[in-house]
Image (cartoon, rainbow, N blue to C red; front, top):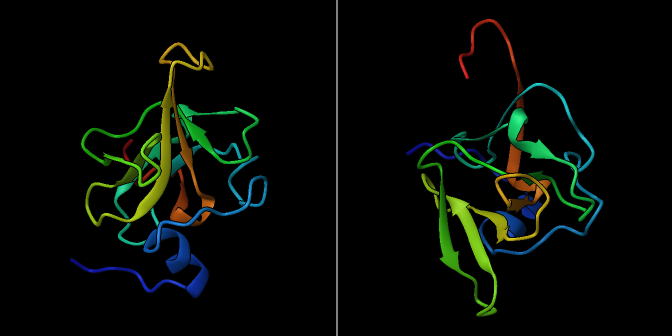
Length: 125
């Protein structure tokens, strides 16, 4: 599998499972039409239609592409970590039952873990 070269800050979050500070990521308050892919391997993860404003300080999505995200018990023993199903890169955490959307799920994602691809006529999603 081909992996993209990561900066030291990207490695800190994606490989070492750290978290970027709240309200600091470029996709927190970003709402253009397209898809979000894994920064490390370009695996399609989320559509812009699944993105919503949660006010938590990180990009939030209520759904993902089928089989694109894997859930794991977090090291803290309380939360559920989500990683890219293709490369295992840390994305963030998933929370359920908060009532933000009808799907009642919030994928709380580090902006540094994802890359936005604008919708174009060549892409189908």
